[in-house]
Image (cartoon, rainbow, N blue to C red; front, side, top):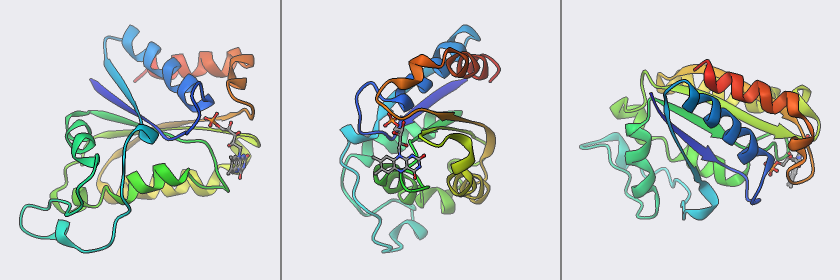
Length: 177
Ligand SMILES: Cc1cc2nc3c(=O)[nH]c(=O)nc-3n(C[C@H](O)[C@H](O)[C@H](O)COP(=O)(O)O)c2cc1C
């Protein structure tokens, strides 16, 4: 399986990235290919609801770095959406990416692909309800198959390293994909 991990944290060495690295490590032991990209390295403009993606060839009218991300999403069998909790939702950058998935509604380009959600937060799983639901419903709308979630408690940069059990669970999740 071809796995693409999207990192929606602005921090280098983020808890999001460390959890994703663990999932990818596990996935590779199971023979999958896994790549990651950091959304903050890309210019992603906000969807302006022009509806260009609802007609003809369903292409987005905006010109930015999504032109590099769209083909990678299409090539993936499983997409990991990694974002810390910011105010009980995803980071703004992850939300920009999710809004730009709109062409895939018309052309069903993500239908049948799997989606895994990786989310660190200070409060842990108890605060992830709205974010978790946002992804669950969005996967449903896109015809994607939920492949689970990793909801871990961590606050400082890299603090997740102090939770070897969480990282082990993330590796095991990757190996089970
Ligand atoms: C703007 C902002 C909003 C946040 N909102 C929440 C929140 O609502 N609940 C929570 O538990 N943690 C919240 N946090 C804490 C982060 O989720 C936490 O520090 C997380 O580990 C950051 O992950 P990262 O290292 O991958 O960036 C917030 C942090 C920031 C900067």
